[in-house]
Amino acid sequence: MEGKYYKTKKSVEEYIRLAKDTSGEELIEKLKGVLPADSKLLEIGSGPGTDWKILNKSYNVKGSDNSTEFLNHLKSENPHGEFVELDAITMKTDETFDGIYSNKVLHHLTDNELIDAVKRQSEILNSHGIICHSFWKGEGSEIFKGLFVNYHTEVGLREVFRKYFEIRSIENYKEFEIDDSLLLIGKKKE
Image: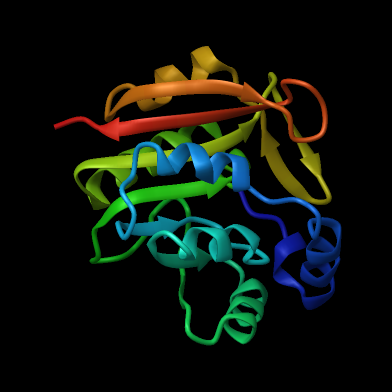
């Protein structure tokens, strides 16, 4: 499900302003505990590039987004970075990766789209590949600024990911309020 919020220059500029004080630094520290430095990493939904810059210090990271406006921003801010237009569900690429990371991106997918995305992630990950994804915690879904937002529980995430991934951890953490978010780390099943 796709809204137009991330598709216009005005909305992208607004989002960059709103998100300027947030980063996934704590999440990335957890990723570093399971994915060796210099691994080939795909970031799904690089958006303003805040997490990409942190990831790029430790990994051979390729950024991606499904918004041309975000890609233009990313490329202008990081001229030596590698960025591609990529849909989070189909992830049409011939490349394979050691890890896949996203910070509050996959919650824009319906339950069925998330199942398809998880399967595709397992296909483009190398043997023993690692995933690290964050989600808003809760039940149900809503439309926020024209975008679909799907909330998740630990039980629900385990159900979706367990076919393709050995779940290493699912942790509650605070983005804005105590335990409003979940971080899932998993390893590709062989």
